[in-house]
Image (cartoon, rainbow, N blue to C red; front, side, top):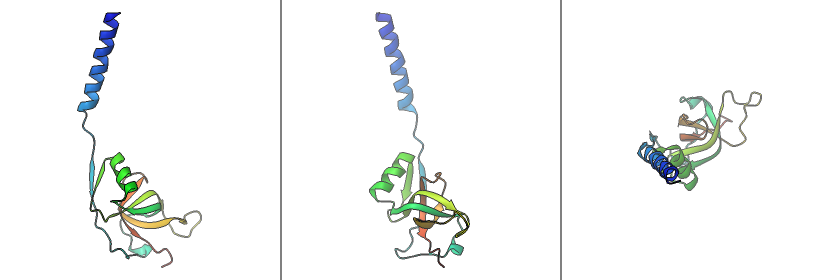
Length: 126
């Protein structure tokens, strides 16, 4: 009985030590904050496809801070806009590619649609 308990203790201690020594991956993203009233036309987006995001918030907002923290993303600049839950729009107005949320053009779309960093609102009517 004692050997089983000591074996279990050694296994648990080894697993805890292995988890404690693994470094967390952190990605630092530098983006330029747009002027607060800046909106661009779709043709001005040269960083990839326009994104349709469920919400767009400043990086310093609680929701954006929490999501970025969970993903290990450090955003430099509290005024940088972060799109949350985003999908790309390839061609505006063509079957199924409309955006009923916030269309934005973002500098960094490398987080699988969970967040997009450095966003600028897009006026799809221009």
